[in-house]
View (cartoon, rainbow, N blue to C red):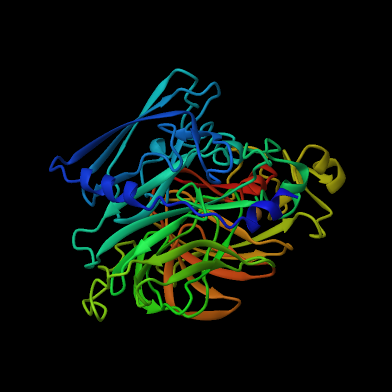
Length: 470
Ligand SMILES: [Cu+2]
């Protein structure tokens, strides 16, 4: 139906990413405490283009993406969130290792911010990198309506680039009149791939263009704010280098395969624009069966320089606690359930039940046979502060799951038994069907932390657990 209509639309916007460039200049203050006042409110934005009406959204300061938060590494972030919506909300700072009380999970780490009320978040992010903030109340609806924004912690010595761009990629399910389809959390979405939409966007725009100049070096911070859509992005004959994953630096490496960005994941790329002046090059997604143009580079007629920059693109190494693998406590974690998953029974509120009975209450997924139907529940992992933990996570389902651990980063060690040549730190790893991944991390941040699938409908349908660190 309209999926076809929108994905076949040929029109483009003339808007570029100047909005993000402008906000970067505002982040030049010398104070060590950066204050933001942000209102969660309804707004209107033109997502699909001039031939369609504007879309009613919920956004931070009414915008999609919300007001960019950009501070320097070492600065404290103070954010007053005012709730101007008619429903409760709260803000999670995705990927930041922060005090538990600031984590923004309403019903676990704080009460929800009621309509008309405000809440003050304050913390000093310990790591630089690319993060995001989003609602953590009925997230499958609130994030789906646009309640998210970029959160950038600038490195003390970033690599030299001509432009530092943030691309928040999202996936909307719109009706023919460009209004948001309000079938949030449908039974089908909960039990299958999550809410997959029909209008993929970059920074809230469908099929926008990005004006570039030949010879220009871009840093592109990809942030996947979709409810559930994963992306696999191809950049034509350009060869991007990955410099960070989930905010954490990696030894730079060139990619010729599509760049995978699972829901909630982030990838920082360095891209040297080597195309002909005046040419156009689409960025193509091919994660699912049908591929499509997500956005397009359009080269200006004048080149910036004849050959690309040669300066180093390497970031300072990640500064995270190294787990002690010889002493690590091992936990095996099995994800089961969903359509075609073969889960027959599981524990709901401590009682074994058949899948039919569980599904009648809206739940279809289990972690180690337990339905995560509540935020406050018996922890999956209960450990002392400072303990090294080794996780072996097996996805025994027919769908991909981006598994997000709050308050920590995990070192990804192996995929399907193969040791990674480049172990990397992650907070939202994407586990494909039947995949097994091993991780290790130091549980050094006290509190009760969510560990859940970031396909938001899956979390709502039981794919969540708690990690308690005391
Ligand atoms: Cu999932």
